[in-house]
Length: 441
Ligand code: SF4
Ligand code: SF4
Figure (cartoon, rainbow, N blue to C red):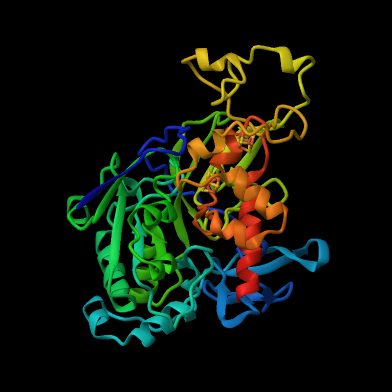
């Protein structure tokens, strides 16, 4: 077992108790295809259709065998389209909970099963997209053998589900998952946050303990610090909880419907806790209290997205943060000391304050120009100069952007957060990376 210490990055943690609240039962679920990166969804259902758990709901036009399945049995109540007929939401009201039955494989037969058969099981069961391929983070080509698969026991977000919670009573499924991975690649790394406790039997299998600031637990950050050659840039990764879902599918032939998520944030009136919920559950089931001045950010404080228009839990995300909405700018806010405002560049006097600081969605003013302060590069976990790459992207100098590390960017959002001018570096770098990828494929 090796230790990796990530010295850069930035940590702003909402402590989440290692306590699982009782399972939340929902009356409806929604699938939100527009939030799944890169896919081009095509519907397989219409309003009024009766679905079982595991019935196909839509597929990816780029690769029609990749289908996304229903996490509930019930009726398609509504399909909501956005601009240019983007499918925003497929709403299913839960009624009769029957399962589609897929083929299953006994645990002791996994090692004797052909790779192609196992892959077919996972694809037919709708969970292949839980595997992601670096550096672009699309789901991988099934026929490719990856140089290695990184199993990350932690969520990349510090406030995401803890393995000490979701691994409880799931050890055998996790071991079955590792056997599946052995059929997909010759090399598997299991990484875990150095500060987290995991069951002894699994702890023994961990290859790397990672310590340091966010995004120390991002598979891309880990890869950046251990990779030895260019082919390793295309490593695959999967999160521990997702591996358990794949193992359950393969062992039982049934589509797994639920997962453990966390709710936290500076505007959370309840304790910051873990919850077991249905995939696609309404966020109202998780956040009972109501008031107007918060947003639920799904997928992490630094790089998550606002769920206001479609408040349902996504296919991948498993942490939800309640943060203060951006309000109106305070009168003469620019001359106020800002003792509670977050700053790393000493723009506000909060650097003198060791107490609580606000995390909110405000940009504290209008769009401002880069002042070449270098703060973004001091915090970038993969040693980029985000301002330089950003300028190359804006000048349409793709080669220069790639040369300055665009493909190493782990899309963590730290550069945007620490930038005193609040330039959306991370968003624009991520978009540039995606565009480059689309051109390649
Ligand atoms: S450039 Fe990319 S990796 Fe570096 S801080 Fe910004 S988003 Fe994170
Ligand atoms: S932190 Fe912002 S203002 Fe400073 S160099 Fe980076 S982009 Fe420019």
